[in-house]
Length: 83
Image (cartoon, rainbow, N blue to C red; front, side, top):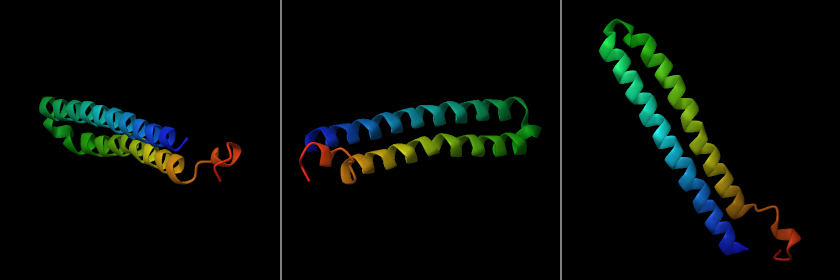
């Protein structure tokens, strides 16, 4: 059970950070393209980009919380007799 918990925690963090990185890269690329096409809209694009990046980053934080729960506060341990 402990080895499965370690595997799942690593899998959760890996998938969470990969998807976060892809989302942030895509959002940042679109923002840079938008500013390149319309430099006057830089302020609005910057604010929208920051809000979007914060929402995307929350996925990585949730993945970290889930991984820590699986590692240190696994609710299933008492049901399989390891406690």
